[in-house]
Length: 238
Image (cartoon, rainbow, N blue to C red; front, side, top):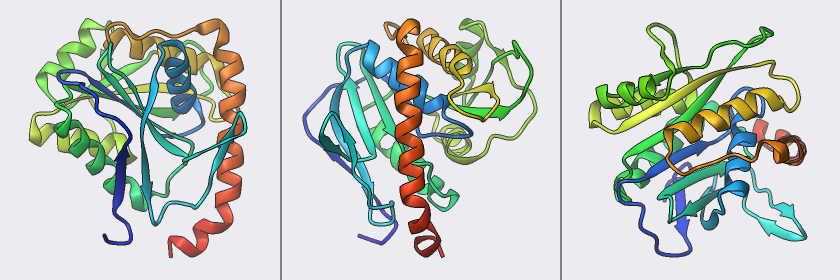
């Protein structure tokens, strides 16, 4: 194994044939991770595996007294949904490898649609969410969900790589573009993002009343994870 290779370890067998994968790696702010956490807790997901690499910051996230890898895979076999959930705000040097691993995993499990998201910093209220699709069928799904399709723009990081690769391999990928202040737990954008994801994924739901509590917990954990890993990044990513 090369130093930067991403390793995925699955703890159980599951069938997601024709199902969905949600990319829950944080982008700008915490909204993507918070929305993903809310969906996991609302729709009864189970831990299905972990995502790791020798170049990831060596950190254990303690929840309810138990150690956890900071990047994990959650599965809801009834809904045929997998979630790549992470508390790590990864250095951009790892974005390509993570997106490639996600696409390989999707191919292995015959995933029909990958749903990712990217934040745009904005102080505007009631800004319209938009979507970008890797294929004609993905763009049609965006319109059916009542979202505007982005005509021109730039999508960075893992979501951008997923779109590029999906466009040449005919893998349906939808990236939801949402607005956030980028400061603290943005409950409004997290709730809107979670609801938009549930429009694209049949059966998935969001418990909006509990979202604020989940947002506070997720923000605290992500912040702590980032702070603990900051002093490691300088030496690891040279």
